[in-house]
Amino acid sequence: MSDQALTAQIGTFVQHHRLRQNKTQAGLARAAGISRSTLSLLERGETVTLATLIQVLRVLDQLHVMSAFVVQPEVSPMALLREQSHQRYRARGHRTDTDTPPTDW
Image (cartoon, rainbow, N blue to C red; front, side):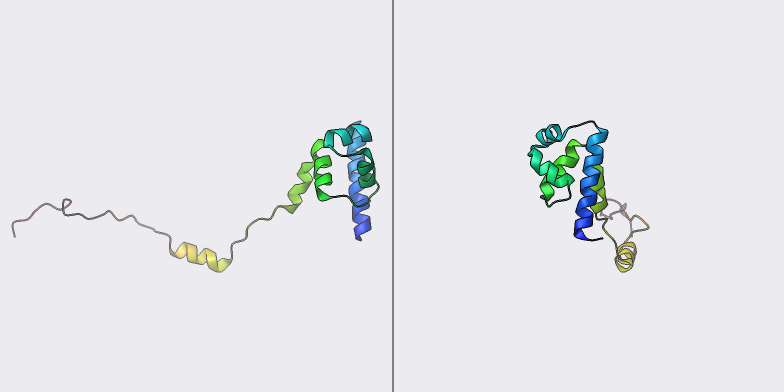
């Protein structure tokens, strides 16, 4: 997909959810802390800042779409093996001189 097609798709998404929630451009823009013309640019697929998009998604209660950008840490198989090789399988108590009774030897 081209950049222009992606921004148009984002604009359509924002407009769709705004209309489903029966919000005007002016009302949504005011709640998001942006101008109505900036919201109009966003809905038309024009370039806006990422911060603007996040503000609008927050007001529309659509921030869940940002979960697509969460990075899950990956553990390499070698690191997993190293971790398992240092794992203890038995507990060993600490020996002190008071643990053993004195002998008569």
